[in-house]
Amino acid sequence: MEPERDVLVIGGGIAGITTAIEAASHGASVALACAGPLFGGSSFYPGTWGLGLIGPESDTDEADLIASILRVGCGVADEKLVETFVRGIRPSIVWLEDELGVRLKRPESTESALESTFIPCFDHKHRLWRGITRKEFETAAKRAFKELGIDVLERCELMRLTRGEEGTRAITGAILYDRRAQELFGCIANAVVLSTGGTGGLFERSLTSQDVLSSAQGIAMDAGCSLVNIEFMQMMPGLVYPARGIVFNEKTFRYAMFEDENKLLPREPEDLGALLERRSGHGPFTCRLDDALVDMAIDAAGDEGLSVRYRFPHEGAPEFVRTFAQWMQDELGITPADNLRVAMYAHAANGGIQIDECAQTGVPGLYACGEVTGGMHGADRIGGLSSANGLVFGRIAGTQAAKAAERMKSGAAMRQVATRALELALQDIRMTKAPLDDMDASRITGDMKCTMSAHAMIQRTETGLADALRDIEQLQREARFHGACRGCVIPRDASLARGIRISSQLKLAHAMLSAMRERRESLGSHYRPDYPPHVHHPRA
Image (cartoon, rainbow, N blue to C red):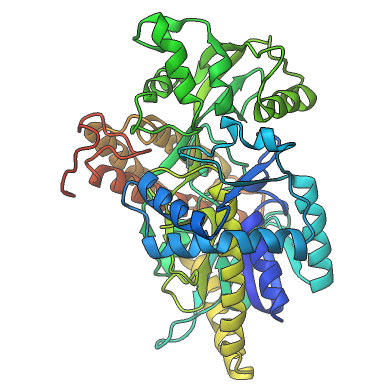
């Protein structure tokens, strides 16, 4: 069992790292556990040069950005969360630069800053723009972790949240699985913060790292949390050849030459340039705009993708495009003249665990921030706000968790309750949870990802979603099989961890499919071809 901490943070991306630093800065003892290495997840997925970060330019611009998020969100974003979010962006950028010491990228000139490529996805105007590179953030965060004494538990995966006795039923800690030692263990904490990333782990093609497991949402539901807007997920074009999992930078669509334009679009040739120009204005798919035809053609090409080459101008290419092209050549050895193949990928979740303006989940002692949460985005999300979300609500979650942990301190009696809760949880896992051997786990995981990729990407129909729900329910029954782990030569805890992970993933998959089926309207990233877009239908 790990030593007692005031705050336990789960997740090693920007949101989790920010939370840990902020909680420790408020005097809390902090441990951060992450399923992979620190600086992992979507935040540091090596799919492009770094992360864009946008915010309001002024107090007046705050009101415009709030209105824009609500408009782009198609009315399903939480207005109070949006207001809290936007008003926290500029202070968080100041914190990042002045207190944490991260040097942020800026446009190289005033002229560059005014280029159309610096207008965020789905937005209508320029905003304050900054760029976060991994090296700068990692250097500053490591320094802060050392100074503040934050413990890092790498490759330790969340299995269960533990709660106290009847009454407050507050969170008392968590059961984690050490993926290197292949052992379950307990960690006592007075407050826990979830920052484990989005839903990409449920899909065959995903622009997220392998340590984004998409299991914490199901674990949170078991602890009493609710999900919101989980049907809204960004889907992005990405490379499948000559490299896989690389974001196809949307700003470059205007320079793209597709091998078979007739396959791409059922349009007259002279319309193609204008359509690709419009498609260059945003990264993710949306059914709100007529350039959705581009994404649907890419999606229809399946695993092989569509063949494309770039034709960049010799002079006058925007800074954003030049930076991306140079990164492709330096890091991947891909030149604009190379033949590329592009397919659709699952990208960022716009929905997740429901929180309030203090990052509280409704379960005492449990907080959440970053992409694992929902409400501050809607059916579509303005570009550059995912990074901002992790910073703003990471700081809020860290501050609030530290305060809650201080209130919860009550000496030996509390430790006894927490220790007993962990012992009972471990006992329950080992007595009742279904072990899965590697073969069964691989098969069930593969079937789940195949089902979600076939029915929960761009094309979502009543028939497909109903079939997918039946498939997931069958997989849930198979995952609950209580049997011996066939041919197990590894510690039993490993097979139990597989079973818990997959059951939690299937719980989230079922919740997503149910929400997609329930929303019988095409709205932003949620496309129902069997119902007309932009027409409201009552929920089933």
